[in-house]
Amino acid sequence: MPVPVVALVGRPNVGKSTIFNRIINERLSIVEDTPGVTRDRIYSSASWLGREFRLIDTGGIDMSDEPMTVQIKNQAEIAIDEADVIVFIVNGQTGVTKQDEDVAKILYKTNKPVVLAINKADNPEQRQDIYDFYSLGFGEPNPISGSQGTGIGDLLDEIVKSFPTDNEREEDDTIKFSFIGRPNVGKSSLVNAILGDDRVIVSDMQGTTRDAIDTKYHDDLLDEDFTIIDTAGIRKRGKVYENTEKYSVLRALSAIDKSDVVCVVLNAEEGIREQDKKVAGYAHNAGKGVIILVNKWDTLKKDTHTMKDFEDEIRREFQYLSYSPIIFTSAVKNQRLDKIPELVVRVNENRERRIPSAILNDLLLRATSIAPAPVVKGKRLRIYYMTQVAVGPPTFVVFVNDSELLHFSYERFLINQLRETFDFEGTPIKILPRTRK
Image (cartoon, rainbow, N blue to C red; front, side, top):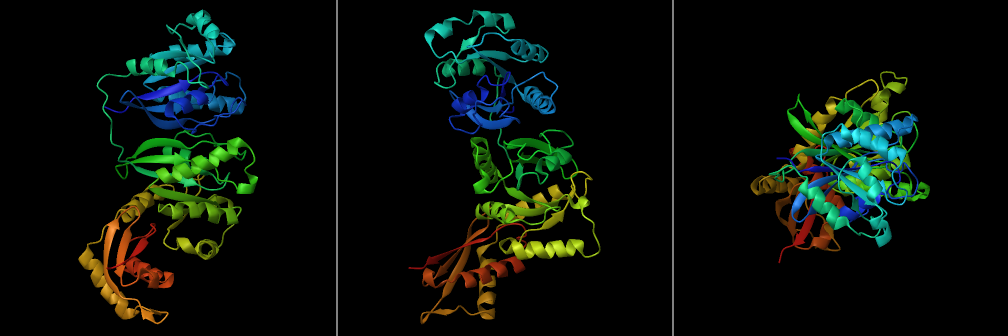
């Protein structure tokens, strides 16, 4: 059976994100006093007394008809739909509000276990003053303090009691890929278009997606399971002023770490910016598979040379990503979106490719006959043996007489020989020189 899912819900500014961070024991969710800061759903793994579960933080449910609050409410309702257990969080300092009652009406319709948490009960007097919350109709209230950690253990006990029986941890063997890039390049629109569902908030306002969102889906055409990760746009360091933006960047980098393959999204309207190269560098340095995706391709006036010219510019500006495939897409027009999962599968297979040592050393023999090892400071490099020691990315150890003699230019030559012989499209390759004793 799947790992249980727990959703934290409530009206804005009751402390959901603080409680989320307290339970997972890290600052993954944005915490600010500004209502509406947590806009999308945030997922994380958690455990209590040996029971594994997935925890979802949500934006506050507000019944107003403002466009953004409507979308936040929709996101919270998606989280409620995904959850096995719902934790309804209210503010113990304000008492029961009309908004709390509105949220309760939504939860009545779910027919799912609801655990009521009274947050901001920071002192014993407040912890006694909780009787009004019985009126919400969810049984025994659980007084807690997210900021101080008081009562969190008791709350987790109640959550675990509500889990479906006989849950077993499922190994996640899906292919994980993410979209990264500057703000407003269309990452969320791409996610929604691929999923065929408004799973991520889409807006013309820069910075709308502040949190990394994980969504599993099955591609019927490929018969493959994926986890798709949408990330907040990575801004230039100098433009990251508010705490909200700072944590968005950290989460985007964390999303890269979780990914097998990263789609670097460029904006066709704006062309290539310096920040695009820095964003792509994060993925390259992390050893992830990389696909360069030019979005909003439908907005350009094109002739027979437009695509070739744009591709040539990408190759000039992203020389360290010469191994990456390039695809031109439009989320609005659904152009070539079906090619993205195909590319992700192929790049992931290449990233996990293993080459037998005997074949590698045949290649090494041919390579050194084409370009003999160089002489450095009067001493010739001798290469004895090559073997693959890891995948994801493919990593090769080369045993030599002196590792300091393996210049980066000859290392690059060996990598190029590997690429010409084997299909490593989309994945970086690492070579580790070792002095043979």
